[in-house]
Length: 222
Image 1 (tube, rainbow, N blue to C red):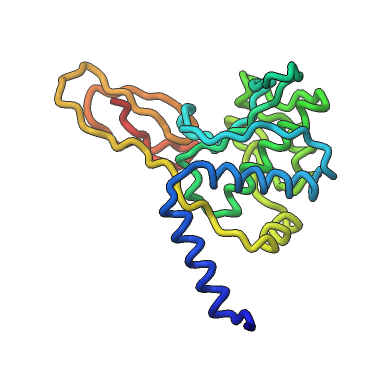
Image 2: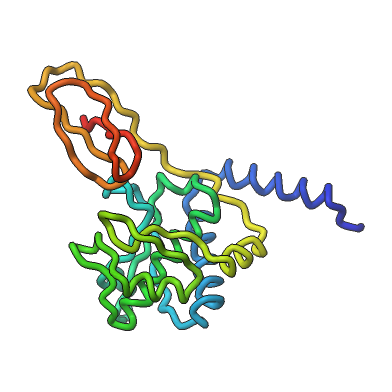
């Protein structure tokens, strides 16, 4: 029977429903591993070492992902181990292209680790010009952030076209951010944190303050 456009669309919808109902990280990680393999072949000629890809909560108050600077995983074969690329669970609901740009960003760090290129300082938060130079050879456009250096990441035209050709959907599940519950206890000061850069301020009353660097509102930490 000929596969019509309507049939293809129905199949795609059923796959979305199936993925949403499964509520498992297995499919998320498998999809990320598949994307890693495709990006590795396209932008690195297959030369990147395969990392362990994980999905876990954002413990840094704003990071979309990270790549460990050491081989955090090992196995029973006494191998040298594996680096870890983590994608933060709260940010999987972004546009698919944005999630892909984060994965490609972390793959740049992995490449630099393999090639002993020091691409960050300040405990890994500040991205230097070496990061920008390598990233822009591997599918990305990098702009400078006043606080974190060359870290603002977007896809270049080649990467956009390639990712579009994959005909892939976004991720079906993501982790919700913890709702802020107003405390009934009296405190002398309140702590507010920028959810993007992690900057901390304190106030003696409830306030609404915008982080001028990130243009987002500070959130009260309870």
